[in-house]
Image (tube, rainbow, N blue to C red; front, side, top):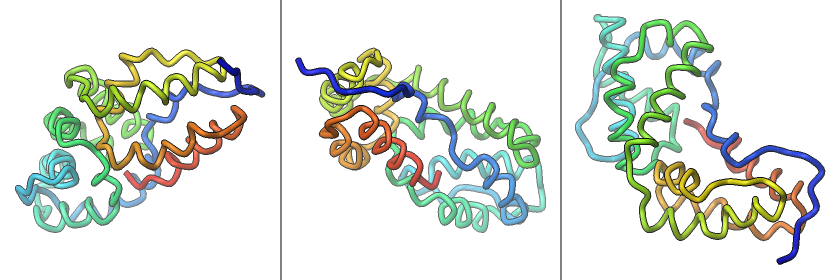
Length: 191
């Protein structure tokens, strides 16, 4: 096995932190007139349905349809999430405190807790198991230990189309390239 060069870095698990917490707080004005779920089974509708339930509780004059629409348009990459993952996350999102809509810290802490709870509740998929064999190995070659079970559960929160975005990263010859590639993929998400 060939080890990759590593100048320092982070575990792949670091990339599961919620992106755009400040953007969420900034888009509060758009969410205030919104809440609900369209009932369609797409991952974005399920996730936004949970969030919009919280919006409706916190801002009772909100519009169900407008919330779901705004949530989906602000987070197009929810389509890359798995149905099982968002279904496991939905009820927790529906119970978010009203503080998440005015505090980036509350948003980060509470949505991270929801994601962690969902990740623990779902079973790894065959697709996540297959993907994580090579993905975890790539990080191992860079000196980072990413336990297969953690990888499989984390990536069960995503659908296989998302894995396709990360697969080229595994081919990076140096660890800084792997790190930069993964950061780029996760950094480009709008969730």
